[in-house]
Amino acid sequence: MRVLVVGGGGREHSLCWAISASPLCDALYCAPGNAGIAQVATCIDIAAENVDAIVALAQKEKIDFVVIGPEGPLVLGLADKLRAAKIKCFGPSALAARLEGSKGFTKDLCAKYNIPTAAYSRFTEMEPALEYLRLQGAPIVVKADGLAAGKGVTVATTLDEAERAVRECLEANRFGDAGASVVIEAVLEGEEASFFALCDGETALPLLAAQDHKRVGDSDTGPNTGGMGAYSPAPVFTAEVHRQVMDRIIRPTLAAMTAEGSPFQGVLFAGLMIGPKGPQLIEFNTRFGDPECQVLMLRLKSDLLPALIASADGALKHFDLRWREETAITVVMAAEGYPGDYVKNTEIRGLDAAAQVDGVTIFHAGTKTEDGKILANGGRVLNVCAIGTDVRQARQRAYDAIARIDWPQGFCRSDIAWRALLKSTG
Image 1 (cartoon, rainbow, N blue to C red):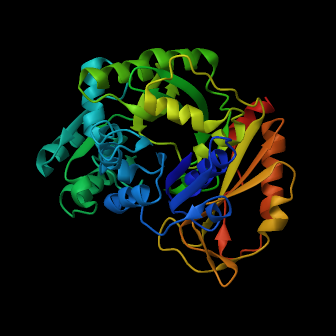
Image 2 (tube, rainbow, N blue to C red; image 1 turned 90 degrees about the vertical axis):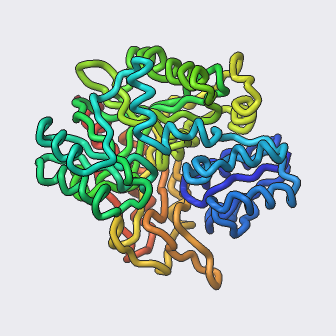
C-alpha cells in the first residue's frame, strides 16, 4: 500500500514513524514533511493547505491511502476532494470538521443534544458582546469562533482583559475571518485532559487520554502555546471518567453529527475539564493532538494503519487496539522567542547522542536539512519523547536526552508531567 501523510510537524512525524512500521505500507510519502520525517518517508515540498496540489500529488504517485494530519486542510475540504477523486483517506469532511473549525457550531450542537459543556453565548457585534461580559463578570473565556492557530482563546481573569479580547476579534480584526464571531463562555473548574477516539460515522473506538501543558513557562506561567509537552496515562482520567466521557460526550456527538447530516469519520479529540460536575467538554478538535499524538504512538502496540483504514471504511465495530502499560512523555524544545517572534535557521547538534538514551525517541516538529546540518525551522522544533515503567523514569529519560542536545537557541519547560509526578509520590 502506498501511503501519503499530510503535514510537517511533530504529530505527523510520529504518525509516519508508526505507519512506516506497518507491513501493509510499501511506500510512504509526506507533504511537506521535515528533516526527521525524511528519515522514514519521501518528503514532497507541498504545503498541507494547498489542497488541490495534495490531490494532484496523490494521483501522480498512485497513493492508496491519505492520512490528513492538521486541521487546516480538513476545514478546507481536503478529505472531500480526495474522496471525489476516488482516493481513500483518513479525516472528516469539511462539514464534519466544523466541530473544530467553528467553536460556535460545536457549542450549538452541544446545547441541542445535551452534551455537557460550559454555558455560553455567541456574538458578531461589539456592543452586545461587551454588554454580556459586563453582565457575566470575570473570570470568563473569550474565543474566536474559527481557526486561529491556537491563539484565539483568552481565559480572562478581569473584565478589562475580556473586553480587550473581544475588541481584538470584532474591532481590530486580529484573527481575520476566524474572529468575525466570538464565543463567550463560563470558566470550567477542574483538571484538563485530552481524550481521543477513532470514529467511522457510527462507531467510536476509544484510544487513550493524555495531558498536555499549554503555557510556555514552568509552573504553567506565560502565554498559551500549541503545547510544550504531554504525557500518558493521565491519572485524572479514571475508568469511571472514561465511561462517562464515552457515554455523555463521544457517542452522543457521533450520533448528533449523523443526525445533522454530517457523519464524522476520523479521530475525535475531546479537550475536557474533569471537575465536580464530571467531565465537561472544553472544545473538540478533529485531528490528533500535537504533542499528545506523540505519546499515544509510543504507547500503541497494535499496527496503526489498519485502524485508520477501518475508520475510513466504516469498519470499526469489531476492531480493537492494544496498548503498552508504561508511561510515555514528550518534552517540546522550542526556538528562543516562541510563542512570539522566534529565531530561525539555528543549528541543532547532538541528536544522535540524545537518541541513544534508553527508551527515547525524538520526533521533529520544525526542522529542515541544509548542507548536511539540522536547522530549526519553526517555533516548536523538537519533541523529545521517552517511555518508562512509570512517570518518574520516563521523565528522567526525556530530560537526560535533552541534556545531550547542543542547541543554545532552544529551550524547554523543566516540569513536564508535574501533576502525574506529584500524584505518584502521594
